[in-house]
Length: 590
Image 1 (cartoon, rainbow, N blue to C red):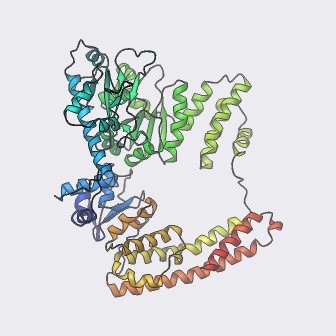
Image 2: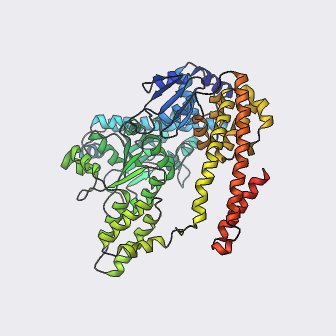
Image 3: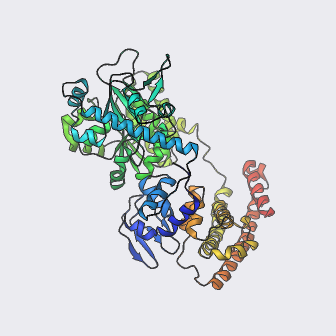
């Protein structure tokens, strides 16, 4: 996709009213000067999603998500920034004359080639007789015409160059077809198709555009032939950011607030056949952080469906931590006695499948069960090897309560002493003991910082509400006036946006390069901000005065803290004393 000119982006922001756009997705209710609704980005019972029509920004006080109208469409639809701008531009009749440099032109050609290839493969499949190998595969897997259409399944003929001849006949350059991962040159120098005699599974981006293919050989694969063959990475197909079926799953995943992550293409299709649409599969790769981020955009809970064999346990070990690191509540599910979801659903039905999913254990419980079940617990060496495999996963938990819970579970199921196991787990953890002075000073500094932070946020609120004051007020406000690093970054973002010509809060929010800064800016939108410009200027001066006075008190508190740690050797904690002195010295420089 080519670069969209800035004047077009500005026009989209100006014409796309955030209340109108959001209300097309959510039922908004008036609440004072703003509008509220249940947040579409996390599950809640009381509305905490706030839309500010004056500033043209939204913020959820529950999950912290926030931004402007373009950000909302990006998050809601799972689109990139250019895709969201184009979507809004189309809605408001704004022409988007893309700057088609060579790179963007190549991408457009590759998108077109893959789309044309998908149509070619799909039409070829529809022409296959039921008695043909491809038709027989569809019948064997109970793939009816509705499923074939829904997933745009296809067939690559058992010919060397049928796709190449079709695409080159439509004017596609061979170099583009190679970049798209569709064709390649043989050792003899002639162009041949990458996929032959395979059922084709189009892999789509979040908007439903095909970007690559997964391909299953029909019948038994030759010894040197892979059963599944996937497209190579291309400018439009990055495997670590692709999930099979994501474009079909995202709406139901948002509605149900959870998603099934399964192993293969046919697992996704089997679930869809049973009416379960909130499911995705990794497209030819182990689960990645990029894929976990895609899941996090649409839901908070994941049920990961793994095989119960050794490979399945290994897949769980890799996927579980990645999902949980992204804040996803992760459970793991196995279908004991069945080779895949299709077989289970055929035998038991979707009701029993969903009941089993509801009973699915947490990732850590699954890991404990599967690892211990594969070990010989009667043999001490085998038992200890299994325990040592599990311990790092328990040790990595942030919550001490969770650590204790799973340590007790492991001790009971493995038959080892809980206290001894706990000591083993804590060997790799940071020391938990702290000197009394450290715990005493933390609430003190927090009490001192709380009013300072409120004043800092109020000052930023005024600057975003009255952007015409930024030029004048910034002469007397330094980034170092902000004690909170995040608020300091917010102020620097506001200044940079203002210097680049931004005059609206929504434009400043959009300019934030970091998600945490963007969310903080969206949350700084108090309804009590003075509407009068002169009153706002006085309030800003008052905030700055309170910030500097409060920081003086904080310096005094930290000085007292330093004095308590002067005798580090006596307290046995020289490292804490050093940190305290450094913190105090940094404050003194400001």
